[in-house]
Image (tube, rainbow, N blue to C red; front, top):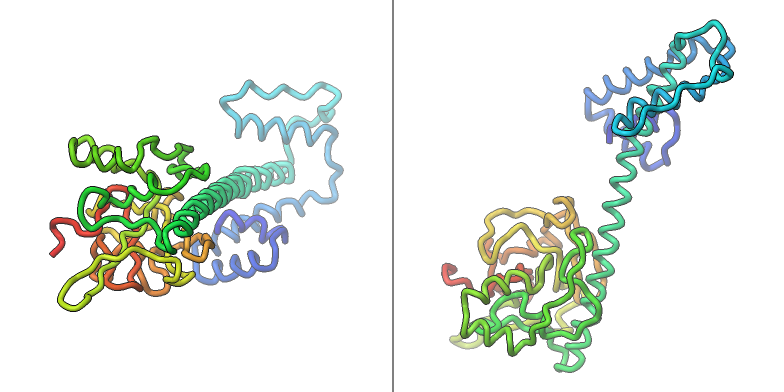
Length: 323
């Protein structure tokens, strides 16, 4: 929020941002001190406001800024004699204040704006990628009586990432666009399951990468009579049911931390819902339900239909150490 202080002082913010800056100042004494320093800097402009600016001031100002901010670039050229002020070699306090404000705006607000724009672009690209996943998932469901790809309770096919080789290719990437782009595995479902049976150690490497940067539903367990049954999601489970998201900072089923995905620098995660909408959520808890752990706080199948659990590629619905 500090990067907006200069804009607030110069009345360059929109109403909503201005309101948030005012609240930030109320809650943060240090920010109030920073604002006072900025005010004193700008007030220096008024001290020399009646003095005519020297010729070539803009050239000297930009040369000084370039020299300070771009030290790895070639030395900024010196102003020509015609651009220099006759008989004046030192800057006024106003000149220094102008340069200081420019540095604040360019080095502070500018850099923050570029970073926010880059982050937003990555979030949008990730949402579009998840939408391509949804097209493939919906196509699968249309050909399987409304059932989405189900992660099996037992091997083979009992890792979350297995769904990737079950759905048609709709040009989705298993890598979040913030981390590059990598298409789905060229192995078939039969080949992956055979590898799990014949070469379990090699399969573990493959399993970690099947769904790459994304997590998928591990399904849920229900009690039918005297038996526990494992169920996958169906299209009638409700539009607000999470089915995919950016992967959490978890390896397999080992995950004690209730933290946001690292795909977007821990700021949150894009979540794909059964209705087809994708939303960036700044918390792992959605509608009171942690999307990466079941109601017992375990990375495993959900405890009932309303307990959504999205597992990383090599996560299993029933880990051996879950009792």
